[in-house]
Length: 244
Ligand code: BTN
Image (tube, rainbow, N blue to C red):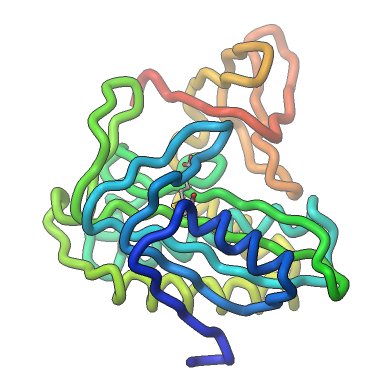
């Protein structure tokens, strides 16, 4: 149990994020990584489902922080970096990239997604559920959103080894974030970013915008520079890079 971080494996649950939320509301304060071999109701960003495919990693880290939800949201970049570092243990580093906001890609295809959820902890502070789904052995087939998995890319990473790497890497990022703020996270994320300087399409709740992915802002928003000279800061949505 390095650094007092616990790990708990479940044979099956509805969603590890939901399990973390239930535990947080019952007073659990972590740090605890809950992982499940199977998920019957895994959830993704923007109300999407997350498929339950045999052999993949479904896990959620539960932490209680003295932070506001907006600040804690920066840790979604730490989760993506931790997952990328786990991939880099078995996959050529050059092929592992991060796509805004927190997808991990291998060779341009999604291998991992992150879902952060939070709320007020009963004993004070903010509970944060850091949900990570990492495709180790299989991936969904979806032409709109090309995906891959570690085995398909020639790597071998077990569920247990992947969780161990993610847990220790996330703890290190959390510590750096607590000490230095978002700067080091932002720098590390940008060093692996997919599509910086590239034309992209941003799909937001009510509109679709086209422009160039110009920067990652200090609050984690994406800066989109549009042809009409406007700059838009995007905090929630999906981006697509048609040319790469
Ligand atoms: C995304 O849409 O890209 C985020 C997907 C996050 C999926 C993981 S799997 C473990 C955890 N439990 C959930 O229900 N969702 C997250």
